[in-house]
Length: 282
Image (cartoon, rainbow, N blue to C red):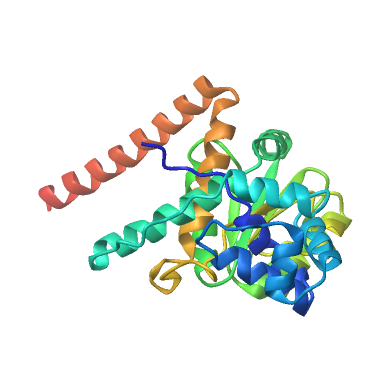
């Protein structure tokens, strides 16, 4: 069974905030539509009461050369879904599957490979986030620490601003902000970039300003237009992307990193054994 379907919808969602009101009307149609129909510029312009020029501008903002290329991809990959959800379990699982499909459409393997190389070249790595993004930052710290990366997570906004001063060309900074609006996270990325550090932003919002201070902008699927998105943990799309980055990084000098991973597990087990033994003696 094929679980992943090519779709233009994640690119529409990532660029949603860059659209004009007219373009948002077009975006809402393509995001929510579930039926095959005549998608020609003339037909859609007439149905949405917009100009064909607006359709062209919308398509270009989504990264296509024009509306014809955009709609070709939309038609080629369009999958008509039968709404047959029954029960909360199926509803949640279907929502997660849709998120995975969106990740499949957004992930850029060449970009992930570059990030892996940056990690190999950096002497010190920081990852920052606030709220649920801060929890995923801590998870990233724990996972990458176990394979030899000198990494720290930062969840406190004052520490983010202070830490910005100490970044240099030997550093790498990950910022996690689904909304793309966490001022302190963006401040750390901006200041670190000025000082020569490699900077990576994980976000669901693609804003042109990010290119000025981010070496890589890793797009995450948005929960906003997801059916039943309110029951999905906002950490999930971040964790999926971090797993992808992790897998690429481990593949570089895999044997050495697996040894480090096994050694850290052994150290943890030995620590647990001593604690149990100590309690038994007492």
